[in-house]
Image (cartoon, rainbow, N blue to C red; front, top):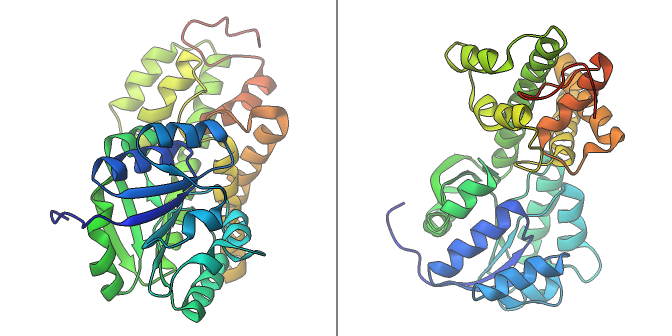
Length: 309
């Protein structure tokens, strides 16, 4: 990971929380980027950093060495890449398609077949950590690729990643990511229940935060998001809607294998409820809000614990 990647012509689709930081770092490392996003201000931001605006995903793919996606859903990947006039039709033979989307195994298999048929090299490479890590160039990449393709592509990830885990062949990146996110979101649901109960019972929430931080129940997800709950800051981190999507993909994957994933379904429905109550665009820790509604108590450091605003 210390070798510098030779400048590439890169098409990049998806300039959300993760994609924005990745694009910024790729440009700073000397790569030429042609970008697309459904959100015009996101494109304008990338252009202000030195990217070229594309008119469509297919336009972003035209003539590039590498096409990267970092979009919201597996369905988006299929529609944008493989739909009518999809981006795959504009990729030159021998080019790379790198998908950073948190997808689902069946979509990755479908994309892998389409890329092979078109003479395009493919790696599924979802990322972990936060948009702030993306901005700082400290993401973790979970790379599913052949050994040959790993050697060809991994120096590029050094532009925006601190660690690259080569987790096996194409498809394994997505499998590892879904397991990772399932465990992470399950962790959030459990401590949210604990914070909500503590608020109802009038416990000192700052003391509870200190106790958990210093004990075996501590976790990265607690340190990232519990402060947001206590401060009432739900405009941060991974969106609740994306968390719901990832847990749904995990639960359906588990179901397809024959695993009765009881906990996964419980966690999934916790996010379904919070999304249905209008919290989808907030941070994933907004999963606590239905719990607070049931208990009529806010888990905030300075809140009236007996009143829901």
